[in-house]
Amino acid sequence: MFNTIGIITKPNDSVSDGIAEELSAFLQNKGAGVVGTNEQIAEQADLIIVVGGDGTLLNTARSFVDNNIPILGINLGRLGFLADVSVGKMFEVVSQVLEGEFTKEERCLLSCQIEQDGRVIHKSVALNDAVVNRQDALKMIEFDVYIDGKFVNNQRADGLIITTPTGSTAYALSSGGPIMHPGVNAIGLVSICPHTMSHRPLLVPGGSEIVVRVKDASEGVSVHIDGQASFPITSDQEVRVRQHASFVHLLHPKDYDYFEIIRSKLHWGSKL
Image (cartoon, rainbow, N blue to C red):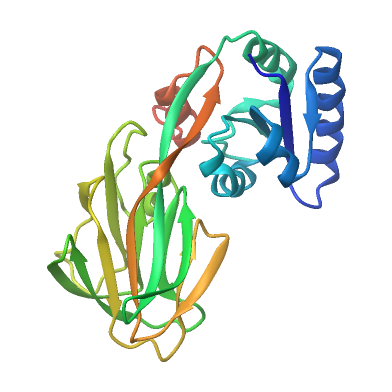
């Protein structure tokens, strides 16, 4: 089923590189071709294996979402919501995947644009979230939120998290947002420390378009993508977010259980 495998490692990590070398030899012994550069992966690979943590997988998903290549994550990190295959089970799971035994799911991304006077200044995609907040100053920002062209509210807060269901267990969760199952077709809006006790997270349909207009960006307001990249905005610009047209296809072991992952990572049911 999979003939050419792209392997992506955590940058500047000798442990990740060493495991990737073992995996490459294993795949070649199985008769699969192995490629490693982004250009080769985009042109030749029919499967990507990420050897790292969720951060490495997030970057990989953004880079290759439009190439429609499924991704399998080998977890070297601490949490592993996305990269959920342990190193100890790597060879076993990869063998099963090569034989067609796996669970496949789609994860939606967000398309995020910074616009000025109708022109697109910057465009990016996010698998977890797009966050509007100050870059350095410990000071609230004031912004207006519009959904599908309709005014929702004016807020004063430390920022706003616009999240996918995947990102609902990331920054949004620590800010009091709800957990969304990956199969839910929705976008979450979670304010960061809002200056009102009545404000609550908001879920909107996945087809919605969210626009954020910052009132005063003179002290350094930015849009942060998956916590890995940031882009400054000014007061005459707006942030426009909607679901991305393409989906990321994640592969998991055949016995994958989303709720078991949640129980394990969030310690549900553990005695305190």
